[in-house]
Length: 332
Ligand SMILES: NC(=O)c1ccc[n+]([C@@H]2O[C@H](COP(=O)([O-])OP(=O)(O)OC[C@H]3O[C@@H](n4cnc5c(N)ncnc54)[C@H](OP(=O)(O)O)[C@@H]3O)[C@@H](O)[C@H]2O)c1
Image 1 (cartoon, protein in one colour):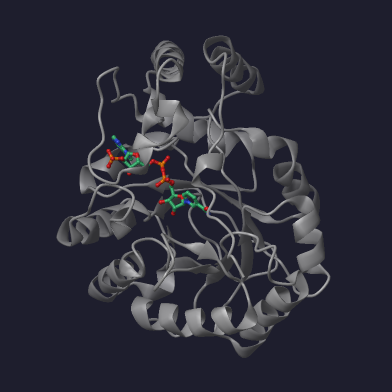
Image 2 (tube, rainbow, N blue to C red; image 1 turned 90 degrees about the vertical axis):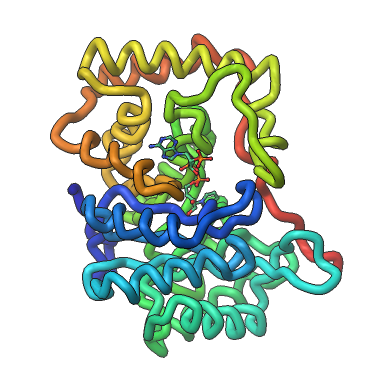
């Protein structure tokens, strides 16, 4: 398994990380805890050492499941536990709203430490920029947690370069977490060049474009209950067909050139595209991490990367990003 030393920290996690949003249950049509724990163990068995979670994933549930899984497997020192802060839920709030005020961060960090059952959080990330909380206050609070040893590295997610600049005037920043996959490349025009220029680690999320890049989907594929893909414009026609056609063409390319499949190509593309990148792969069943082993020991050339991106552009005439997932700000 390839690893990446996060500049300015002691952390050197695997370059493929397990994402545990779906494990929280909410917005993914439910979850099964025993299966989720087996998935986390299977990921660790396959060499994954970074687990990314957030309080917002199932209102604390994902963190609790991650906590149970790491307590059971007992390899805390090998693992990099990344979680987030700054989304609030509760009475009178529909879903979650952004809240990165000092009071909210101070409450959340203790809740996360308890749910995860750890003494310190390895990477603590502001989940979304909060325009209603002064950036200076958010950054100063994060810096205090870092100085006190409650967190070992600081990250931000969904931030623009300008927001990162404002944050870094007050606190150190080690990692950013933007969306990135073969179908969602907007970050390549903003935060990705910024992170490369300034030596920040990048945990890129949605490696499989919420399952689209696994190759398992077809025209009649459906999602149950509160699954967010029911509202994702990519999974609605006529766009869905465009994405499915791109997946088919990418799968052909992967098989002909490397004897691989589209899922493996999608993750390899992420790793080879950005040397400072860590790919966040969401999984909730143990078999879903089986292909991790097939990402190793091969690479894409620069020409192949260009060819792959051309295939996507040829098939997807009407691309759309992950904006639909952005949580609202508070009313007050
Ligand atoms: N910072 C942020 O704002 C933010 C936003 C989004 C995500 N993230 C992070 O990034 C992680 C990854 O993103 P994501 O979970 O949204 O999506 P993803 O990694 O693009 O896709 C995950 C989904 O793909 C399917 N899948 C995974 N492996 C598979 C396999 N081998 N075969 C078939 N299907 C497979 C599963 O869906 P089914 O189980 O339904 O089949 C799984 O839930 C999240 O878990 C989270 O940690 C962060």
